[in-house]
Amino acid sequence: MANKSLAERDQDLIWHPYTQMQNAPLPIPIVRGEGIFLIAEDGKKYIDAISSWWVNIHGHAHPYIAKKVSEQLSTLEHVIFAGFTHPGAIELAERLISILPASQQKVFYSDNGSTAVEVALKMCFQYWSNQGKEKPKVLAFNNSYHGDTFGAMAVSARSAFTKPFEKLLFEVEFLDLPDSNNLNKLKSQISASASEVSAFIFEPLVQGAGGMQMYEAEYLDELIKHCKNNGILTIADEVMTGFGRTGKLFASDHLSEKADLMCFSKGLTGGTMALGVTTCTSIIYEAFLSDNKLKTLFHGHSFTANPIACAAALASMDILLESETLKNIQRITASHQVFNKRISMHPKVKCIRQTGTILALEWETSGETSYFNNLRDNLYNFFLGHGIILRPLGNIIYIMPPYCITNEQLDYIYKKIEEALERF
Ligand SMILES: *Cc1c(COP(=O)(O)O)cnc(C)c1O
Image 1: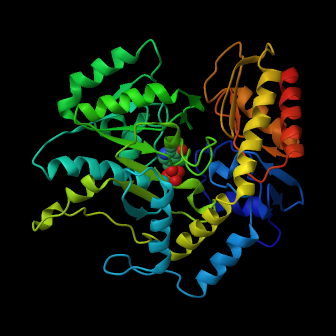
Image 2: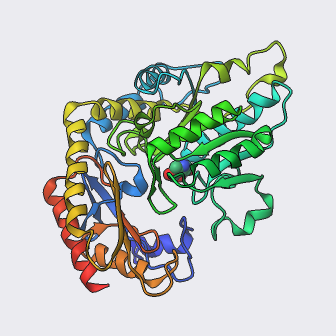
Image 3: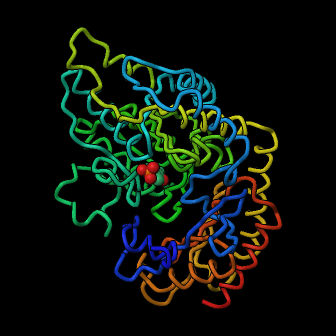
């Protein structure tokens, strides 16, 4: 073992996510994080332009979050959350409710984005079954992504990723993203199956894993309103869009219609700890109140509302709500807009789109444009070579940086993208 490198020791034993292990290059061992940078074993520094899979919003090893987490660690590391509670979970619930849309009144904790979605789905199905109604279906968007556990996978678009499990996924009716042309068609589609549909789940404004597809708040508003009029609950999956990503604290803040349930994770703890939150209206909560024990929401995870994760989330919220952070979000948004204008007419740019701090650029390709083509690997390696972590989704590259990124660092990334456009 002594003469093996970290990467080789990893390769001996570890199976990585979303990785074909047969031909995967050796993973890069990261030994330290510092603000926007991840620092490798060999001393090489990488700009984390994708916030470590979209979770990190304030930079790595943030001293304030580290201090709060460390204080919590030596006070209370964990406690069972059935029959017990703790100050961090209570304060986090209070502070979340104070910044969420007014419709959200109850907080259920879990420990990641997929479980936050599972909980929302179970709340919706059981909301109806507690009232003696059977509504076995869910509505979701084509191209959606809501997580990798079975329920979350079922409401995600069918794709190469879900193929081996297709027969095991429950029935979901998929809708196209709304625009001015198809809105009426979508409404009829919803009305036609409404009696069987428990809930409509969506990623508001930006579909993340589906390739950073973006759509307008006004059309989503129409669909939410239509669902409400047809007895369908609505779930805003803000696991990716939450906590400033879209330029406002939540993507739902761009909407006038508010969802019945919301899901959070990723940026919730500033990317420090795994934590999931599902919030809902009091109407949903009250449908589970009964002398009949069978109407209970029978769901919970060992690490529900972990106190260290709650401490990280509270610290992250302190930083998020500072005026400097809010200004940074606007600064990144404005900087992306300028780059967008500059590059949009480039012949290799098939499409460039932006919502808040998220910028996505679709490469013009001659041949296959799937997740699996070579362009993706070439781009990934090109940026890594220049000390930038950008992880393309097929022919789509996107920037989703921690809010502490400087203008100089953004300009460096833009410059390298322009170089890549000349090269690939
Ligand atoms: C990442 C993501 C999830 C799943 O979260 P995990 O913590 O990875 O399980 C769910 N919904 C959306 C919109 C996501 O982007």
